Image (cartoon, rainbow, N blue to C red):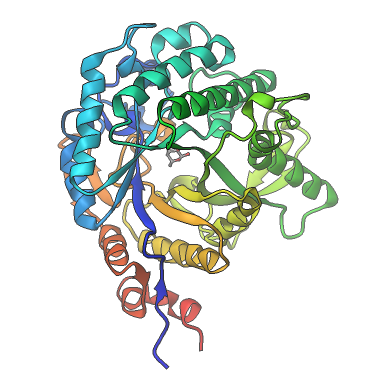
Length: 441
Ligand code: FCB
């Protein structure tokens, strides 16, 4: 019997994902730029600087994406470029985004545009950012302007990237701007982000009735330790609810799910045309009564877990299927809006790509409505507080010289896309150690 080839649906979207601040360079009008200037805020003391020089020449990397066969690219619009002063929109900046998006279309690549990927204009952070309810209105106004400019070339919109991560890192863990540590503020921020999402959903549909609008939701798999106690299991359940469940449950039911709050949230109900899943890793969760700032948990990995670079997490492909299982009940199309690993020497990524996509293929066999996959990321880029220490790119970048060097992972992904399938030859060439798992017997 010939060995199975795992085919993807003919219209499956093969993508890569990036975010404005991480690639554009010289984004000096936002809160992150200011944060980077503070000593100790970024690992290795590095800054975003010229990043990957996309503001000048994203097109060179669009060519590289097209050469891999990628047919969708998720990129974000930088609010501080489009609206450098409150209410003053910069037509030249908008025109640059039009040029980029047309450049993608010209290469046969469909854009997915994220309207908020972590950064906010400096003027907005000075007036309270997402802690202020007024930001909801301002966000919707900015979104309307962007959609007016870009809707001739794009109908696939991602309103907000990872509200939970944004609130956690900036308002609880205090490692991203604005560097706060307050549970109450974190919850306020998520509520306002969801109201912003809902307002954006409506205004986009008014301007472009056929638009497909979603949000990118980060999920982590939380498991108690193998020999976990009852308290560990309870702590795991609570953190899982807070991090993975609350946001989507609120959007679905139109009722603020605890710990976000109580009462009706009718405005946010039914404001998703699709769900984006950003999946990276799993964490083990133990109860720890000394760590109130982390919902009384300590998070770690079992000794036998395969770890990723820089303590980023555990190599755990099954987690993607476990997250998907929880999303199918929403009865909405799903995109994997991000998935990838930090792996400078590329010794894990080829296997990562093959195992995660094999797992995704299994989900599709179970009729999970997964429409596409966006690998994070095309080129190494500025990884927020981790600076340049974590390298997530299919293509390596030297930020000093801007030199590009495709990793073997780029080849794997390109071959997989061209075949629209995972077959035995691909496995043998790039990750022979996977053979027993994918082809048992
Ligand atoms: C996600 C972010 C993205 C990138 C990856 C590694 O949480 O959305 O910008 O930092 O992690």
